[in-house]
Length: 429
Image 1 (tube, rainbow, N blue to C red):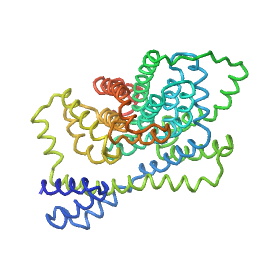
Image 2 (image 1 turned 45 degrees about the horizontal axis):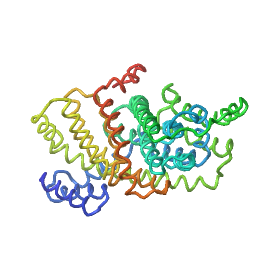
Image 3 (image 1 turned 90 degrees about the vertical axis):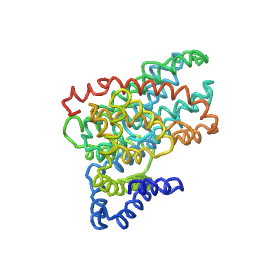
Image 4 (image 1 turned 180 degrees about the horizontal axis):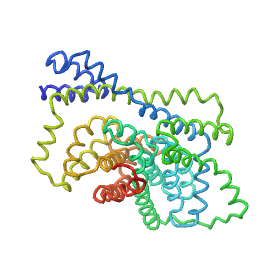
């Protein structure tokens, strides 16, 4: 039976069926042929799968990120970052990475970060004689930080799938995103020094100009403070903070910066739902599929099989990193989380890995997959924004991927780097 289920799912996946369809079809085949679960029970489990208050945050964070990407917020964040880094080696590149880190605390997704920052920074870097492909690669991998620093849609999906605290995940994601971003900044500085990306002339601003830029950016800088502050202060749940982010985004973008109008709101709402609906469908079908796996005790059997081969935590973490890095190149991130976490999490907890730490490892791995050829999603978007052929980016992205993997190894093998903050704040890890 197990072989039949795996074979059906793999065949459907290979021929291009959506993940949710492959899961649903495999589950229904099992219900009809092997009778592991009745159709009534499968339907009930599947409907309960997406009946989660926590998952409401997915479309809300997506909507908030979209409205703020189009509302002039990213432009003002870039201007503030340039105040500090314009006059150093690789300054514009460092600005791009820092802008990605700050915007990640608003958008919740990697694609929105690449789009918002790329459209501003790639032309600026090219104008300053940076190589176009180098600049585009930098923004592509910088956008991956959007899935690490909260609020992150991927963290919402992981917390729902693993049954862990989303607030703990968000808190651990902050140092993870900072470590990842700092690694990129270090590589940017030394590679820029080698390539000669130095300012041709020093940018001088008067005190009035500096204050004007900072004053204009205060509403933009307050957005992540309001969203995350409402969660960590205990005044709002993550879902409520997502709704608050939508409200703040509309107020800042329409009434403060006045760069978008009310006419765009229905389009953004529809876009948020089209992003969230497939995730909900996958979660629904995976819940039904997961119930079949649980009845047959397949996750426990897989865990026993792997642990029989090795129970060395270092080796297991290395194997899981390799699996996720490969999986991230061809599978949508949320689908990968939903499919693998129920199987791999028991293995990790059995060797003493915290579910929160494992969640961060999973998300960082899959974020790197966003830019790993041949099918890195961020590469496609960056290619369109930067005007660089995809095959060129696929060749030039590897030094950045190597840098990201070094950051991943630090996060993987020194868990306190990401767990110290949630512990400090009293959250469960």
